[in-house]
Image 1 (cartoon, one colour):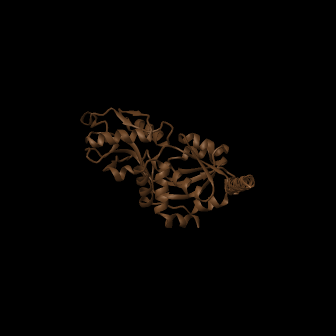
Image 2 (cartoon, helix red, strand yellow):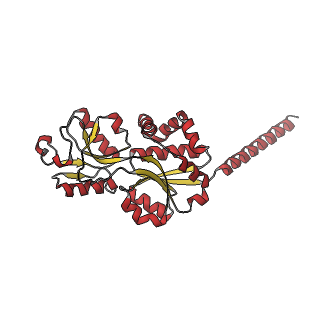
Image 3 (cartoon, rainbow, N blue to C red):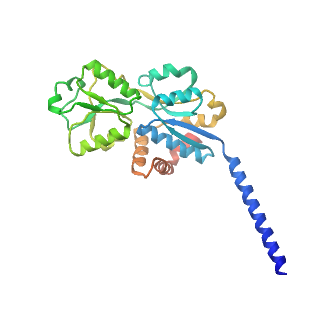
Length: 287
């Protein structure tokens, strides 16, 4: 009798295990495929890429984020090694890259309007114009401008600015986070510092900063931000293209996303928190 009961228990457990396996298989089949985003180390790029990771994974996609400098992102999209890049600044900042790769990628709609970039200083510094940098160099006690990733378009523009204005400063290659670390240290001590910076960026909410006027327009006029994909991505994933074409952000929404991520343990958890708190806006894009 006991042997018979034992056999029944074993059989029941086997059936449950089989059902569990079948369930796992069904879950696997629910995946809508893997989508790979290319991103560089700019605060808003990290923010929106992680935001879309959260949104799309909730919709059944597997999302991979690959971080690299800007030029390899463009090359990866054009070669089909990457699927999506959330940030293209046009008509000025990314024009050289766009001209090089435009025939081998798909540029989609604008999601943010009216960017800015250039040389930035704390507002407590007594300087307002790039042309004053040499004149006030001894007073400032500075010999360098703290830059970001060497391959960034902003750095290329800054190298041009050094030449156009004949600046007696070294432009130091760095990264977005390293540049922000230097800015934070100087700002807390009210020391002079010059950095390459852009908006949208959470730094303008955190610190009282100002752009140095650029009378020669080396940094160009304001850009808008688009997103791009590999050429046939829309055929493979039309609903993602539809959702991302509905995507619009402004200083308030993007600023709150970046601020939430800045305060979180990591970018993805911050993005998840922001998505949960902004379901109405996200639903406008995806429904």
